[in-house]
Image (cartoon, rainbow, N blue to C red):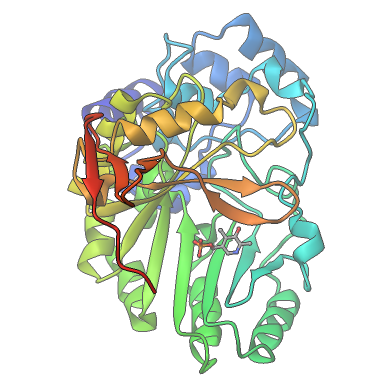
Length: 376
Ligand SMILES: *Cc1c(COP(=O)(O)O)cnc(C)c1O
């Protein structure tokens, strides 16, 4: 067990055995959900205390004991703390913000199925998460109990996909699909795998970071029956890459599941090349390929998390060429209104000279030319 988790358990869950602490259902049952519990574990600021007192009106609060062990009790600016403990800033509404900025509701032929791109769909399997990120892009649905993994809804989804042979890739997300039981998850995977034109199944989850105990040998034995199965793991900060999380990723990678990460660019949390380099290096060591870096969606009450797009471009400039190409994610803006993910990258093409040479800038700022004369 990582030292932070061991110390936290001794202090706040002294009665919990190793077996209980390592049991994901025990972790879910003992999630930290109330003001009183948080106050016992964290020295709250006025902004946090006020938000917790108001409660109700916001995204639900829930933190697994494992993840709470990684929260700094003393530093309100720590990334993991800011991602889990609400502040009053969440109640502020700013221009350009919306509850459904990506227009997912308009692209949902079935409740909880988003069909935006021609060849792939997004299935929101459940609205339940083991821990709620304060900057959640689906705060309009998560934790409200409206999207359940009911057989009736899921059968409608399977039917829709069966009738749409262009769908070759199904992304199962939520909420967090890995909070479902092995049996329920297998029911979803088996039904998707039975559709001949579904080539690839993807799972989107934050479980390896917030509830690594969920990744059991039994779970991965089940998952590997449904290859080609890919996984997108949500990571925010290098502090998340503890012993337990590394072990969870190793189990998944050993089962032959290609792992990618999705990270939201968050103000003061990971919006520097230095923090991002540490994160992507930690991810590569865990065999997770940094896939996307997301500009934070303009979700209601998220202004305190958002950075200028130029900052994201600077972060990418600080990675490309300076570290392994595999470690560099694609920086994207999920276009408000449902336009999909649009890449934004530093410009390395400086123009063309009179002879037709392409003028290029390398990662160190040096100028180079490429004889781009070939026509047709
Ligand atoms: C992100 C997303 C996908 C998957 O996009 P990729 O670029 O293929 O990872 C599919 N559907 C929706 C609605 C999405 O938001």
